[in-house]
Image (cartoon, rainbow, N blue to C red; front, side):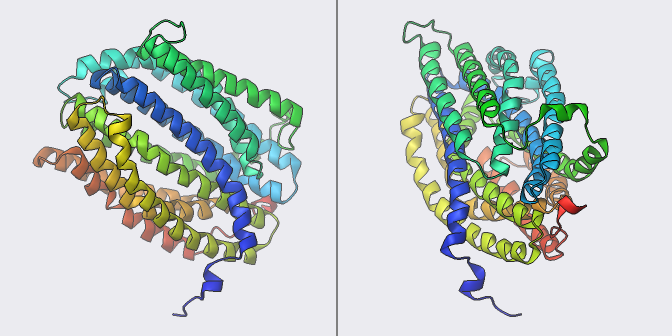
Length: 459
């Protein structure tokens, strides 16, 4: 097999300047959001393991909602990006309308889960935990209030993702920073009773999020009205092209189903981990992911830039260019992944600083998890880039192959490990994530078939 040269593997400086111009603002936006979560965790951890555990299991429901919201926007975004490359305004508007209709339907389900079936849903997250009832008391209080952010979150996500898909990434960054600052100040005031505010503890964290999310939504709406981007024309809701919606659903259903399988898998896994001890396990695992989210911002950066660049090349019918850009992005993903791995090893030093008020057992779990997550960063960044390339051209079945096949193996295996071994949560996590190597192999085999190399705007 012919070996590629460095010139073939990596693009020139102009290409990577384009990548960074899109990726850096997106990563900064995600970093700010993750930093807010870290500050939230730091403030709530001061209330003890049990209250932090309650907030964490409630946050898992919001996590599921955000993943599904992201899958919906990604489904419409595949088409929005390609229509942007083809300069087709009506196509962009129909894709935006799809996001609105499906996202609002999803928000209704979110309200039911958080406000009607609150404790029943949360109890699934702490089966076998020795302090389940105490954790549920705190979680129920927090989760009910978090139900009030469904619409705000949906609107902000729809607009932000659409701007990113046409390569405009600065406005979402500014609004995220604004919301983050508001959230942080209100957290400090409402959780502990500072700045003349009442001390509301767990409820205070929820109220801070509600206010910040509402302000963020208002900023997005006002900016969009003033900016008048090509993808927005609400009159399109009166002339919805249902045939086109069906086309998006056929492509997007694979993404949505794959993401559902993945998030259900992660939720079941988290519930099993939480059953391996008391509040120290729940809070320790939660703390590790709160810090690890600072690393996961890399996914948003490289996937957004990959999707925009390759999607626009496909939409403008430059298929050979898109083929070359695929190689350049995958090569960059390897380098970037190794860089994030090195940074990840340094994050363990944050544990005693940020979560020093948690129990020592919780801190030890957190440190071990961070080291493990860091080791997997090169693999995960490469995998996310592979999947983004496939999705950019509408090859969404690869997502089902990747997440579906591996999930069918890992979840039964995790139940067996829980039943027949004394593995702690960290070793269980390692056992499951080793199967992600298989995901890369499957994604690679599907990419080689080049089913993604399609101009969707001409279909």
